[in-house]
Amino acid sequence: MNRFHLPKEVEIVEVGPRDGLQIESRFIPTEEKIKMTDDLSDCGFKAIQVTSVAHPKAVPQLADAEEVMAKIKRRPGTVYNVLVPNYRGAERVVNMNADEWELMLSVSDSHSISNANKTTKEALKEHEKVARLAQENGVIARGGMATALGCPFEGRMPIDKLLYVIEAYESMGIRYITVADTIGVADPKHVYETMVQVQEKFPDMKYNLHLHNTRGMALANIYAALQAGVTSFDTAIGGLGGCPYVPNATGNVATEDVVHMLELMGIETGLTFDQLIENASFAEQLVGHPLESAVYKAGHSNKLHDAPKKQVKQAD
Image (cartoon, rainbow, N blue to C red; front, top):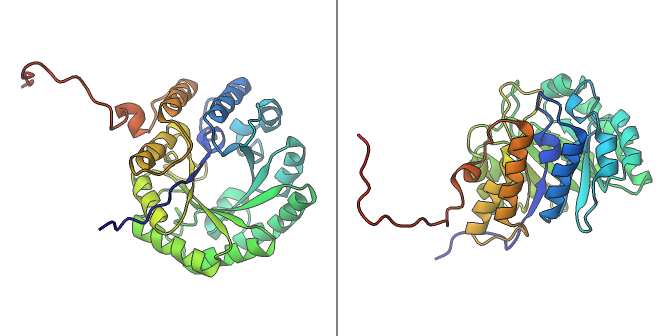
């Protein structure tokens, strides 16, 4: 008897060019960021988060956001997204021709103050202006929720705090919510219960899950989210990334690891594993350090090797 409740397809949102690179200490040349984004576009992603309009002093790696957005090649059918943390950033992004703005704030007050020098309530108030500006410019706005599944300073977030933020986003006319495990502390049971509860309370919203693989549970959490009915996930090529304002931050769940798992389960993503591995290889050259991706190191699990003609002598 089949007890799995799996969708036929999911949407993968590639965030490598933004969340993947923002923590890198060495400045990545602008032309290399453009090439990275263009190569990822060629993979056929339905959506790519290209950059952020965070203050350049806060995230110097993405200070070239305007130039990157001006020079990337736009693939028909791909949505190009920019992270917008505040109204000042929104004023910058207006002229970048982004298809979507992802508003981002922290669900926990302590992380919000650390990240944006505002409480969650104050950040939401500012996002009301950002949402209006997006509507005035005919741009779709997503509502992002950092630390939704755990805060480095406050621990697990009460469900009421998530519902409070979602309700505020709904009042702004936003219908797409990203729930982020910014520090990689969520477990499958927590993910499943959280996503069931938010969908029951706000069933008209579309939900996306943004997971970091800090403690190696991201793939298990994706499986739990699939069981809860979530069909959209943020991933970063090679497992790059991490939040600059989180102690001991590590990368996002690797795009190729997620696609590999979903492919084995018969779930379509519209992406090709071998092409993703090529992009991961470029990403590794770009950042100059080993990737976190498991299948980049080990290869596809369906790959077979020539059998030895005789017993292989084992080393002592």
